[in-house]
Amino acid sequence: MSRSTLDKEFALMQSRVQDVAKLCERLRQENKALLEQQNDLVEERSKLIEKNEMARAKVEQMISRLKSMEASQ
Image (tube, rainbow, N blue to C red; front, side, top):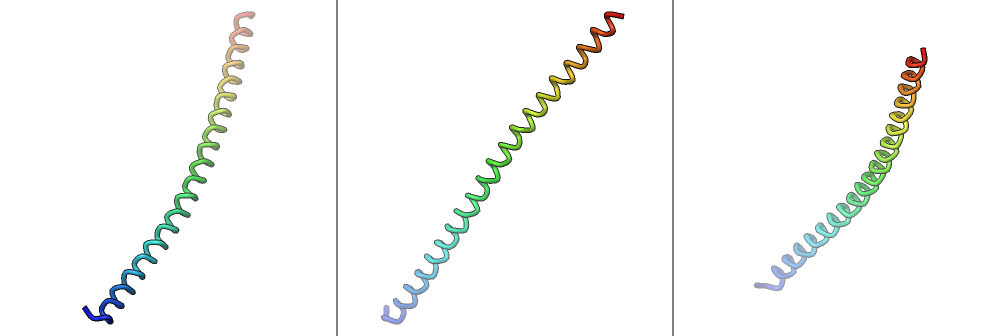
């Protein structure tokens, strides 16, 4: 192989390595964003479950009071 051919192949490999490095960085950033989004959604889900449990408890208390009012009549 001639020096010129080796230089071209080296330049091509170098370009490909840079492309892979850029892709890795983009995927790293995307992964970070997705992990943050997942954490936010998990937190939101936890809050919604808590609100749902509080609402359920209030409804059960109302039903219990209505039943006791009905029984006292």
